[in-house]
Length: 106
Image (cartoon, rainbow, N blue to C red; front, top):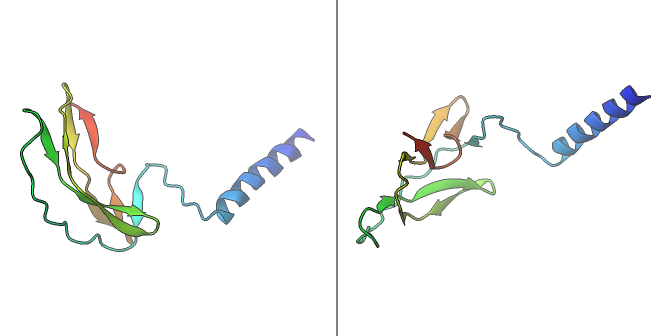
């Protein structure tokens, strides 16, 4: 009886994911099916504090379309380096590598 209950639970989870239109990507990457638009020009002013660096704006894939997120000043993190957001063409889509920009230990 327990095996039947387990199978029913697994089937229910799979059915719910299918009906919700979920796409599970185990690597945490975002996949878009069209090329991202060209980057927008951004005027970069003076850093608010010495040592801050500019993280340029980029296109994010949200709600089945590209949305622009403007750049911003970022404080450095000792022992880490900033890895910017990048898109790469792969198979039949465009992938945002590891989601979006992130900190990486040096």
